[in-house]
Image (tube, rainbow, N blue to C red):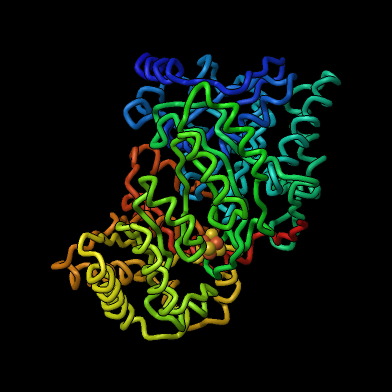
Length: 540
Ligand code: SF4
């Protein structure tokens, strides 16, 4: 292993504070996040996986991340190893991946390649390699490109699935079975079981139905279990505050894939905060719709009274009370987010956003009165085309609407600042829009064409250019990343078919990866990819 890689690990390890005691059993499991350390340690899903594995005394749990670009070259000639003890990944029994984003599937392949774990399941079984498990939100997306790679996809709630796999592994290991035999038996046992998709146990995904159960009695919410200064959160203890969403926006997988909205009880949040206070006073409340937590005002008030530094993700102005906005503004939170999505009210209604123009301006007034001066507003381009409006009007309408918002704000508060984030519409599998797409022939043709993202990027540039003389700030947007996300969601073949090119080109650059993938246009088809996916039934 490259000494620079190890030195960097040592530094990170030295700076970490562990909030749970690692287990030290005889079965070796490695929790892997297919991206770099800072991204991994910012993911509550990864902390959840690490904590859940450590709850089993029979396991000994370590972590692994994607090495930095410089280290990748050097690691190539060795075996990629665990973060804590530099044990080669091939020496573990279980490699459990937490994959949040589909684009990180490419990094899963990088990690396996560096670890010298074969891509072929049969080769792994023949050679006694570890069991490969994939969990995380990406299992809801297009997993066709990873169908041949993972032994088990954990589709259900982690509270159930991690325990199911681990207890089975312990049972089989107790019978003194060999690695390959254990792995084969686990695949057989979980094939067809609720909450799991096991590729080796079904002829194809199409026609398979997975029952995805939410946790039985109560959810176990994710929280930071290792504090580190080496992430954007810098020693902030994060706690999952809500799961799912109260809304069902038609483009969003949160609304359609996480089942009913649930929230972490306030007393459990307080208990967690209490437990971390000896190490940090920085707390973060996380979730897709934190503003919908029924006790949010009380939570915020109590933590502020205790002089804690508290932050929240996704504070949507249209969801929160004037009282909370006032508290936020009194406590340095001078930014507020408004997810407008489209300049056109009719489109917002069609997407189930249900936000009238009048509501938007009323909400801005509410925030201004409370002393908020920084506004971040989100838009999605491509919605016009989806809902049958002229795509040619989308850029002009959006620019005009943004100018109207800015004028409204600055007339009332001259130092108000507007930041705009614009994303292209990428239709995610299992969302209402995805199911409606085959009937939407006009949009489907546009979406399937090679110029889709390029056209939306041109609209984005037109909006930015029309507003360039204003003080409006635009969030940096890399349309190539969106194009790659779209391609992976449409990919109908194994991702490793392309992999030698990705890997040996050392290409991190989305445009280069896209170029390689586009050399096989027949491998991509949005309708065909969605068709191949297993169906999911939710039990909440
Ligand atoms: S876009 Fe936001 S508000 Fe809409 S369903 Fe998704 S998480 Fe909820």
